[in-house]
Image 1: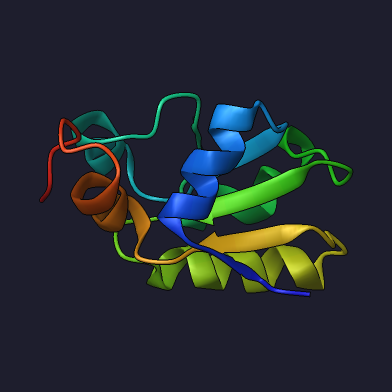
Image 2: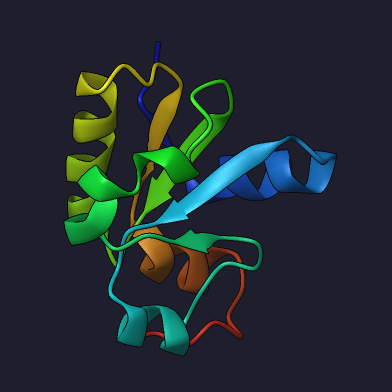
Length: 106
């Protein structure tokens, strides 16, 4: 099983209407600058106390600025028993470059 997803794969899945939970683990000030529509902000530092906001039966795609914090989030969620978690390769930065140039880069 792959634990990564490219921004193109995410866009295609969203366009098909797949039921994905897009977990943004950046900080609130980052989220206010640039976000993927429909994503849910749960900063990485608050993730351990926010597990009740996540459905273990849904596919979760974690993202951050470039993919490092979301990789940590994915590893943590897998340790907590979530089995269908992916890290968005390149994060919001790759989304802005490859998918939606209206999303600001920072």
